Image (tube, rainbow, N blue to C red; front, side, top):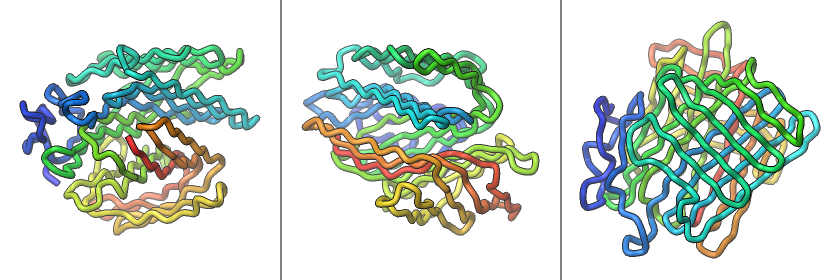
Length: 330
């Protein structure tokens, strides 16, 4: 894939993919001013900001999404010591102002409010403030921006394409409050940003995996994807070593058993042999006429190895994260 090194608009004035935007980047360089929206254009524009946070005590997921004809927010908390799960996923039809997602380059402020849930993700010069307010869960976190990210444009066609930004190696601190109990967040915690903007087919499946940790004094970030990029020149596979991104062409092989929540998930390729052993698996399903989705997301510890382009092989012991299969009709 060609590396993008200068700011660029994702779409042309007619809403088609800008050929100059296709490629990958090490920073958030894409803007989204000309994405076509509304019924006239098939309700195909999808925009979202997702933050996932893993701590020694909790799993946290937060999403602000605008699907063109609807807006949805998501808050998910898993308490690792008790097994308690809190899950909110209010849907707003039509979206109105329930989800505000800027089309400009960062710094960004994304805001979502509906169904008793308020989410706000606000960039400053040094990182991102993450806030959630709901009857049972409160979130006040800060994730400094450190090192490279992976931005990729997936071109299914001139009219159907997606920009994804994965920032998988963010340290994070602050507090998460669950049913009145305050959990400090710091050592052993990390955050992942998944930003999406694009024009989607109605039905699509994907695999996604992320990880972060320190092994033998080296900070490693792991970003893996599959299925949805097959048949295109794009891949979203990367290893981040002490803040430096290494991007890899070529599809990876994902293998797993969805019938067994405790079964390990495997990912293999020329530069990678990785296994995630779950401590928890989440199954999320939505069926609301136009919107239907099902996601199996496993959280756990990575093992195996990943190799940098210079041949240096890194042990994945000490790297934690998640892996998923998602199926969407939207």
